[in-house]
Image (tube, rainbow, N blue to C red):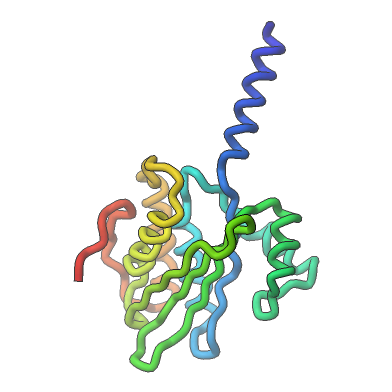
Amino acid sequence: MKKSFFTLLLIFFVAGLNAQTTIAIIEFGADNVVSQAECKAIERAFRNGFDFNDYNVVDETLLNTTMRNNRISRASMSDDDLYKLSERLNFQQVLLGDISVLDDGYLSIDIRVLDFNEGPILEDGQKWLRGEGFGNPILDLLRRVREKLSKSTTDFTSANKENKYWAEVLRLERELGWQQSERGALDSEPEEE
């Protein structure tokens, strides 16, 4: 009796894991004007804020190691490379981002999400003045992405996840010497302009 109970429990646990979509967040691309430090900081903020109840995010170290072992670079990545990665790491979606500096001194981030069953499912972007805090502009983009990708109406955040996001954002902004963001709420509505 006990054995069959634990077997059923294990089946429901595995079924629950399979219900979650796994997404890979590929290293963000940057033009020659954006520093690697800026690019990595913005990518980390985005990765930390991309913590869905119905999503698993592929471990960054595992993803980078797999890419390196298969001689796949972000700069020369093809659709075939993405497909090979998805097979090896078992993810259904991939998020790609590009960061660039615009002529007016603003930074711009463009996000694309591809689903290996449905094709491209999302393109969005955000811009903000270079050197100013990026916490809230990234949050605005995250809100839109979550709204478009959400499969459920569950609460996406907890105080712990929100605190983790802001701790990382403020640390990264200090590291870059940028103006510190005023802390916004991860689950609040964006301000109207």
